[in-house]
Image (cartoon, rainbow, N blue to C red):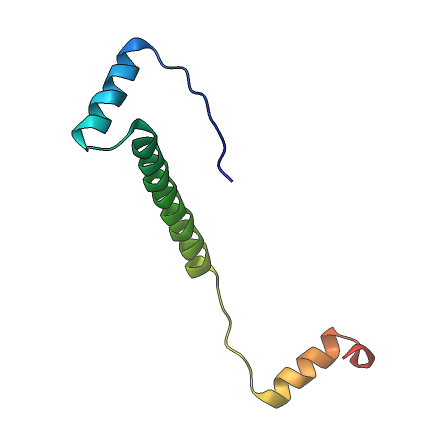
Length: 82
């Protein structure tokens, strides 16, 4: 299902929008959709890059040997819950 959106533009912006859409041989609606799609993809890429940087900045400790790990977990958690 599609939704209708009304945007009020001043005369200059409306003229610019028409010129841009006509220069690409698309309707104004298709032009606005393509702008939204492109802007969303750029925003999404920025969000993913920020998440990747946050993950890369995390400090990760080496996993100890299994016996030592078992002892550490045993001290940290009630073994009856595992």
